[in-house]
Length: 145
Image (cartoon, rainbow, N blue to C red; front, side, top):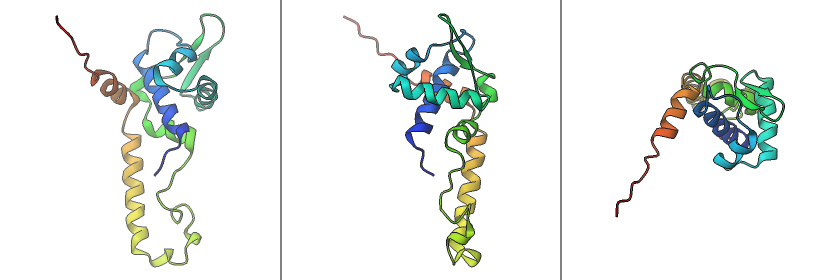
C-alpha cells in the first residue's frame, strides 16, 4: 500500500481538525499553514472529504471547516477510502486476471492476508487516537537561563 500526497495531506488536515474539534469552524488557510499543505490543494481535499460526509463546511467570514462527527467516530480507513479509494498491495488482488498465476499462487495468498490486516488496522485506528499521539508527542522544550 502506498499513499499519494492526497492521502497524506488529507490525513494531516483531519488530524488538525480533530485537534481543534469543538472550537467551531477552522479556516483552511490556518490548516494549510500548520500542516504545510498548499491551500488550493487543501481546499480540493476538503471538498472531497465533505462529499464523503467526514467534514462540514461553513461559508462566510466566520466560516471554515470542522469534522462532521466526533474524531473518535472517524477512522483512518474512512479518510483513505474517501481520498484514495481502494489501494491494493498487489495488482492481482482486485483483479485476479491480472496474472495467470493467480489461481494457485502462494504469494497471492500472503498478499490477501497483508491486505486484510492493513484494512483492519486502518478501520480500527481513529482520527482521535492519531491526533492525541500527534499533538501530545511533541514535547515543548523549556530553556532556563
